[in-house]
Length: 283
Ligand code: SAM
Image (cartoon, rainbow, N blue to C red; front, top):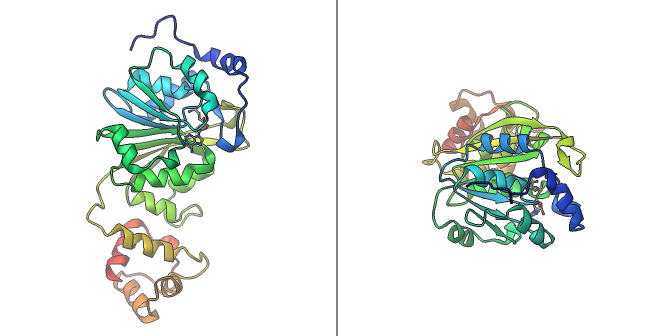
């Protein structure tokens, strides 16, 4: 894709928003990024390149969409706010052959519709996510049948820490383990709040999750049930949580931990994903 003189330079974006009298909608998590270096760094972090198909959630003013289209094959960008139609028409001008903006609430797009849009091709998710739906979107793409190759998202820093934490740390929990079951997550970089327009009250980070098939043979639904029970009451021991959450007898819960060489008084948060898989198999 050659960017000719008609290309809208990023510094124009704020002016374009002004010209269209655009009002940022807090409810939609509208905090835009206009810094070219950061946008390009995020695209690099995502590893999107060549013929890759990219799904973007929340095109906003199209700043990330454009940088993605420069290096990847096709970009399918969802955007809920129709007030952005004329703005995106302007900022994505000349990229029509590579970019399709779908003006819909991504949460109302069914998996079947999504697969039809993507035409069965492998894809990567890259998004500066609206904060109010961060976890549901990540979980949806992690757990849907046609999973992406990777998910690279800009999210609140604290959430990023939770997704990538290790056993026995304060941030460790159900979501950390749900991700560990599907792939490997890594914080790629921190992004201070002043990089966004308008500036939010929190700092962010970019997290990349590479999905893999390490645990494709595992009964994931069962493992997740055990994990949810183990974290139901954080101050309770694992044995007590297994008893109340899964209806397991004390004797069986203790025996399972003994078989694994674990102390009966431990709490769920000290177990890593391998141990949770083993525990669910024994139970
Ligand atoms: N990608 C742009 C950027 O990096 O500057 C915008 C990111 S902004 C944090 C999130 C965008 O997601 C907003 O444009 C918002 O309108 C859009 N959005 C919010 N909820 C959405 C939903 N349910 N479906 C699709 N887009 C949504």
